[in-house]
Length: 100
Image 1 (cartoon, rainbow, N blue to C red):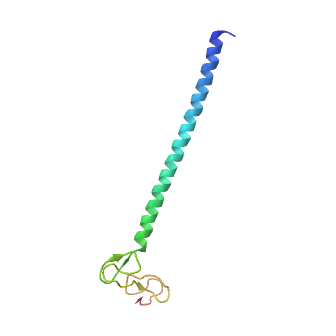
Image 2 (cartoon, rainbow, N blue to C red):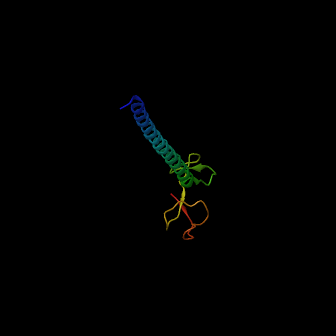
Image 3 (cartoon, one colour):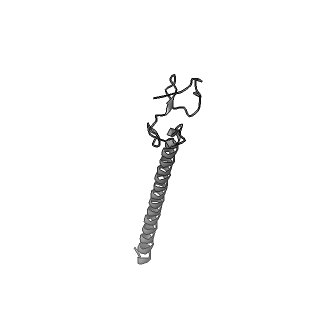
């Protein structure tokens, strides 16, 4: 086998190896991007859930805990549906909320 043939075969092997490495890098990049997107989505979902779980006390303070951080009152709860109600009446059943 001539030297040119050996060089050509070696170059072909190098090119195939480089193509394989390039495909691997693309896969890693795609997986990394997907993981970052999933992390951002989880953070957005958590922030949205925290916002949805907030309730406004009669004193005007927004809270995410069981008691108002400003006046210490508990949130108004529908006696029928057992959900926190920020209005004068429960949006599900129309009952007037009670405070604990």
